[in-house]
Image (cartoon, rainbow, N blue to C red; front, side, top):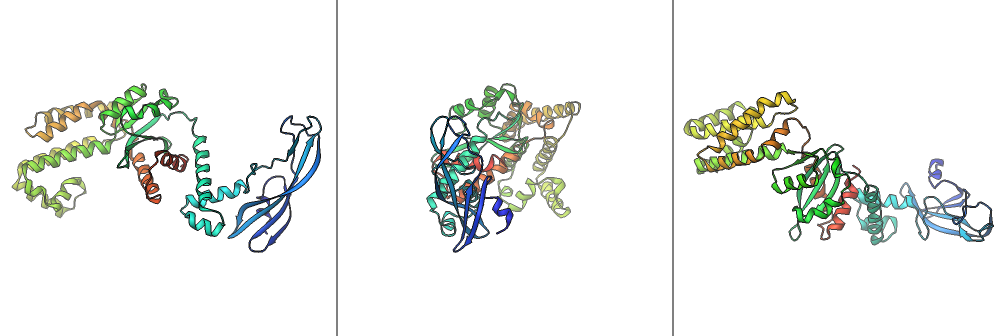
Length: 393
């Protein structure tokens, strides 16, 4: 047996022998420091010896058992009897913490409970219980954390019966901060009130949701609200497609044209641009609306701008809002009203580089967790899985 593996048995443990027979059996004795748990005295008298059989961290592919000899003591000062406490071994447990950690890591990495039951010779219910114990321990490590300075808020689907859940993400450190059930202020009130240091939040990034905007203003009073660029551009494209449907219902159903209309003009190949130009020659009104869409999206996609650079951009944004609100088409008037309502939050996009793409990435990982579990019914279990697995990433 390699010496470095013997050292991993634990501090203060002396290995006497290692036997390989249907696995690995380590015979060892605890010789580390011992003190009375009542009075911390080291004036002790040995009264008895006993052996604890424990499951230990596997050596290669071999299951390992640890036969650990311990002593029972009597304190000469307070006359109390007690057994030695061993680091890495909690009372009344038949396995070391290193073995529990190994099972947690294996199950987290995709090894099923039945597979661990067959290879490690432990029950599948034991695997589930240990997995939850480690998740709760990891979640408690972050329970006293303060709110991040840059916070992303977005919703994701949970179940048909229970609806949506809201994700609070630390956009600066790329970590999940909290997951709460619901997406209205009434359902999120208790979770928001439990958050510590809400006054520390400086920036809140959200999509074009009025409920999230009022929630951010109420619970994060010192934060500036910034719109998520992806959702703003998607809103512009959606209203443009609705306008196209009014002007040419038949052409709107052409999937080839639909694909070209959604892309940026600069990303089209020459033959694709020629196809659009031929279509616009037959429908000049659609060509004018398409040109307006391209110019507005180019304006919204500006990044890393200083305060001085933002002044002409704000003038252009107000110009487009005025043009859209006076448009003869209902979808464009609706778009103008939306951009006017969110003009302050949209203008801040040019200064702040953070966006909710980080949060959307975590939502993809949450979907994978749900698929592996074949769905969740209990939101508390779902939150424990998500926070325990993603908090420390």
